[in-house]
Length: 469
Image 1 (tube, rainbow, N blue to C red):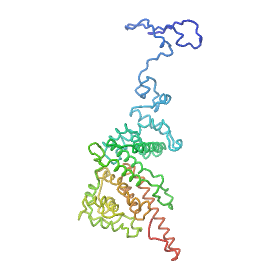
Image 2 (image 1 turned 90 degrees about the vertical axis):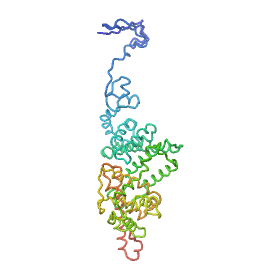
Image 3 (image 1 turned 45 degrees about the horizontal axis):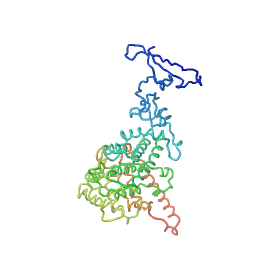
Image 4 (image 1 turned 45 degrees about the vertical axis):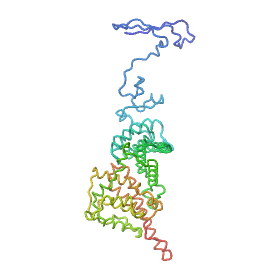
């Protein structure tokens, strides 16, 4: 034995069965060997209890940061039992989380989370997995370039509500990829509540130029989140259920954010912002140059969807062949008619849709667009911005269930479903498919009601209309 511990008892103890440190007067260690420190040495009394002497412990490569710092054994799971017992955050490297986190999340069920709340170990201790997924996968599916979202991740270290918005969307993406795991929707809902509460508190304070990118990033993430919300849509077999615009908040949400942005940042600075150059880029220019649409085509579109024209079954079909390459509408013409129209009502939305529908496969002559091309990214940005562009009068018509507005909304969502690849633009696909189905079901229901009413007799025929919605 290289080392022994010798303790001299000072005499009878009051508690012989359980001696304390005070019962030991002198404690010595004796080490043999050739090292300079070998020999008999006295140990200070407060460290003299042999039961309190810590044995040598080799630092574990797989342990969490807390256990490694305390030089205690870590079981390797995430979160580890030691951190749970101490009530501390279990922190691991991303490489370790790839193995440890998924097995833990799979054991959480949505039924065990009342009122949309998630327990502390699930949401708080697993946020690194969500951040990692956002950084490695979700970023590639969003409309702004990667460097803008990398900048967002750096900002999230200062603003908790921005981090919660990131975690919310990352959990939504995982829920899309792994629908069998019921924990991800619950985690997303929990982070959404935190993000909204923190965002409201921040907006109630005085905003400076420092908040510009934080506002754009948070509002964009929340807009992606509202695109994913489809729980209020009627089920597939509910043909008699009509679309209820009052439960769909996408237009109201976008309008509110636009108003707050213009009020809080009347003169946004491009020099201090990473996002503003991308926000000011309008995809209409590149899309219009590629589509090569003539002025005659747009005029025919305006007539086809005119408010003076009755809405009937033909308006659900893709309208008109496109004439391209002759008497072209220039990008500035599109911008003028969409954002600065000379007429009010649905005309700007019809113009906006004319450009979008020209990319559908059945539009002749067809514009071919690759799923991974730069032009597809512009098209996704164009679709994402529709609720912002169509706010105001058109959104009011939708809330009133105006027949013409709902027809245009049907064509918009159908085009979004057909044009955007499902896997990459996951945030748009389900809403687009559900809205297309719901609005078409509405048309079937009303058309049947019209036919039934027309069979009753001329005395009640005045109650029918040649309308779909």
